[in-house]
Image 1 (cartoon, rainbow, N blue to C red):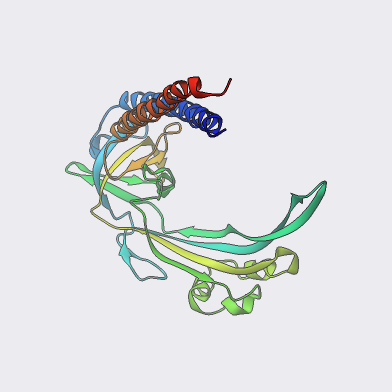
Image 2 (cartoon, helix red, strand yellow):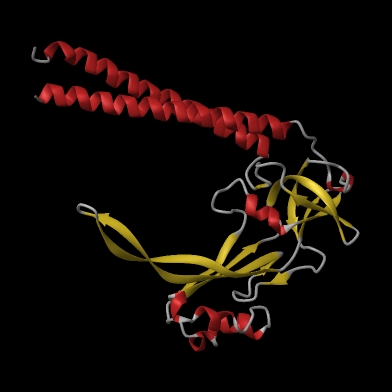
Length: 280
């Protein structure tokens, strides 16, 4: 009986490992294609960028935009760009199956963004000059956590749904400046909204950070700006060029495929050794 269980277990683990290895091979292939696609486009200096340049690579340091250095509204951090976001915390009820044909309600917390504001474009500078960068590109960073953006504030305010709780403090500062609509919190305080609090987030970007930008330039108010990501590729990387990062990811995925696939084959081999021991 134990031998039978061991063989079944090894087959299960081996099959799962082989499937995972196949998935890692597909990921490696996709990253390799993305690296090749990004690598086909030229590297340029900031001074050479025009609105008609097409996709291109830039390397330089983060720098202030047209308005110069800014002070983050809530944290007072000196930076070249910042963003304020308000997330709503609320309850949702879903039904889950239980027993034979029955179901029970489960109430759990959820979160959604209800408001956002940012300070505007920043720049990338090299020895030749500078070019504007659309902050929207920060939504497509090579780092999954959003780096080079850094979170200066992330505070949860669970003071209930009533809007009057949030007339002071950080939420009050956002409303006092006329940025956040004054009636937004009133609408979200209705009983059917099931709001129980909020989370206030402030992200900042500092100057003189080494950045690689891969995007499509265009024109805004008569000035060239790196504005649009190219296909589904990352637009900003703080560690390495986008093609290099994609290629490194492909190599890592290939190594993991070899390790996981080898483990799966080892499980099948070990189960084959146990087969003669099964009762007949």
